[in-house]
Length: 124
Image (tube, rainbow, N blue to C red):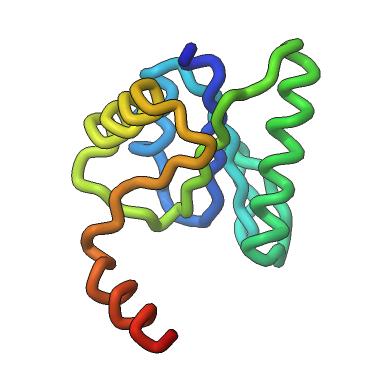
């Protein structure tokens, strides 16, 4: 996949510089949204709920697609407070996964939540 086919959609109040830089370094487009604080470097949707913010980010990416004349292959949603030790390395690793497998939907490994997920599925 061409990196210009990736839209990084980041929502939250936290400092997302590491996420942004990792996305930009690979040529992805970055869209940021805050819901509490008006900032010069992000779109602002005051008091929006998570789903409303995600829809807003997706709409912003769609407007950019029209402007650019091409569609994104992947929309990668990030919460502002999502944490990994090395965004640059992990982002590149995730892009390799997308490149190799070309999934319709791609999710990062959630091994740290495996026990929680396993316990919740036992209830069904």
